[in-house]
Image 1 (cartoon, rainbow, N blue to C red):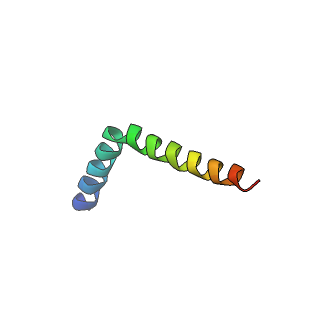
Image 2: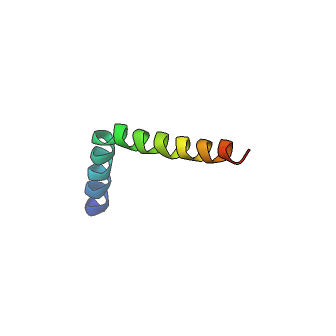
Image 3: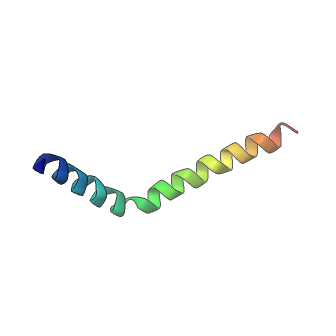
Length: 41
């Protein structure tokens, strides 16, 4: 149980530190999808 709690804490810390990068990657992916959708017209 302690191992699960430690790994969860570590994952939570990693997400807190890299949250802006995840949003950045998501925005790029959304832009690519929107561009390909508009390019089909």
